Amino acid sequence: PAVWFLLYPHPRREVTEALVRRAEGAGCTALVVTADSPRFGRRTRDLRNGFDDLPPGYAAENMRDLPGTPPGTLTDIPMHPAASWRDFAETVGATSLPVWVKGVLHPADARLAVAHGAAGVIVSNHGGRQCDSAAASVDCLPAVVEAVAGAVPVLLDGGVRRGG
Ligand SMILES: Cc1cc2nc3c(=O)[nH]c(=O)nc-3n(C[C@H](O)[C@H](O)[C@H](O)COP(=O)(O)O)c2cc1C
Image 1 (cartoon, rainbow, N blue to C red):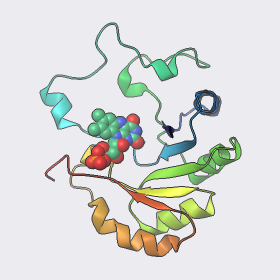
Image 2: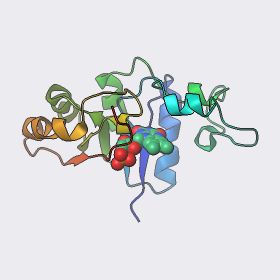
Image 3: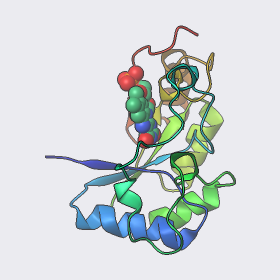
Image 4: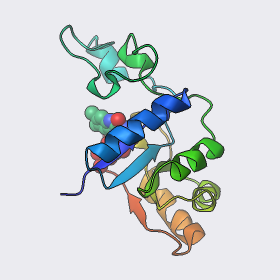
C-alpha cells in the first residue's frame, strides 16, 4: 500500500523532475534520494558472473520516453556524479511528496539532510554493494540518531550482503 520511489538524481534536472512526476503519477507516497551512489561501485559478483549490462530484450523501463537520449547501457542509467545538497533541496521543492535521503553514514551529513528539507534519513551503506568495507550502517546509527535529534524519522538498512 505504501510504495516509495528510489530516485537516483540524474545529471539533467529535467530528467530528474520527469522521474518525480512519474513517481507521483504512479501513486508513490514518498521519494528516497539515493545519496551514496554517484557511480556504480566495483561489484565483484557482477564481474564474476560476467554481468555488465541488461540482456537483450530488457530495458530500463523507468527511463523510457524521458527527455533527452535514453541511456545506452545500464551503467550510465541515472547517476549524477556531482549531485549536491542544492540539487536535493531543488527536488524537495519540486514535489509535495516527502523526500528522504538514503545512504547517510555520518552525523554531519544527517544534519545537512535535515537542513535541506529531508523528511527522513536512511542510515545505509547500500548493503556493501557500493563500497566494499564501508562502515557498517549499524555502527553509524547511534551518532546519526543523536545528530538528527528527533527532527525527522531515521531508518536503517540492512542485513549483511558482503563479508567486508
Ligand atoms: C539487487 C539489488 C538492487 C538494489 N538497487 C538499489 C537501487 O536501485 N537504489 C538504491 O538506493 N539501493 C539499491 N539497493 C540497495 C538496497 O536498497 C539496500 O540499501 C541494501 O540492499 C541494504 O539493505 P539490506 O541488506 O537490508 O538488503 C539494491 C540492493 C540489491 C541487493
